[in-house]
Every structure is written in C-alpha cells, then in structure tokens.
Length: 84
Image 1 (tube, one colour):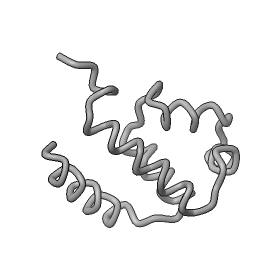
Image 2 (cartoon, rainbow, N blue to C red):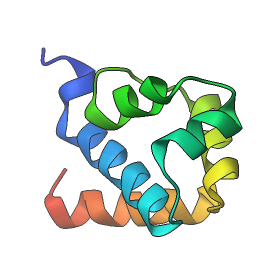
Image 3 (spheres, helix red, strand yellow):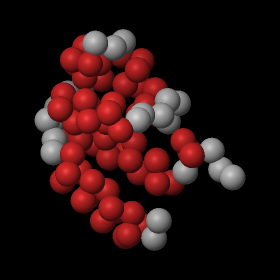
Image 4 (cartoon, helix red, strand yellow):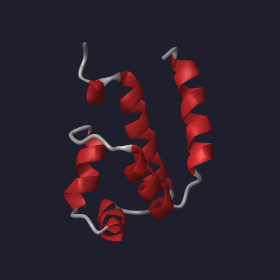
C-alpha cells in the first residue's frame, strides 16, 4: 500500500491548506508563530514531510481564518472532480 502521506487525497489536502494560507496573505513564519511552532513545522506539512492530525488542522484553520466545515466541503468537491 502506498504511504498515506503521499496519497493523492492527502496531497490535495496539503495543497488546499497552503492555498488557504497564501490567500490569507500569511507567511509560513506567521502561521508557525501563531501555532507556537518553528517555521519548518509549516514547511514540512506543506511539502508532505509531516502528516497533520485533525486537531492540528483545526488549529491551523483558526490561525489562517477559514471555516473548517467550508474547507471540508470544498475538499470533498475537489476529490470528486479529480475522481479520488
């Protein structure tokens, strides 16, 4: 079985998180500081070197300022469009 961190579904999730950060006009440093983490924490999950759990994703949503329910709807829609 393929490593779940490299599965196309998780890749889409990572890409959407990064897009949300960029859309919010936040740097990795700003997000990391708000999370109380080093900058490489954000870099690693955005590049797929580190997997996030649900509670971490919720914290990131709060920092970036997006609604996790809306994000989930957009994620599911994107999965369907990609046939994943």
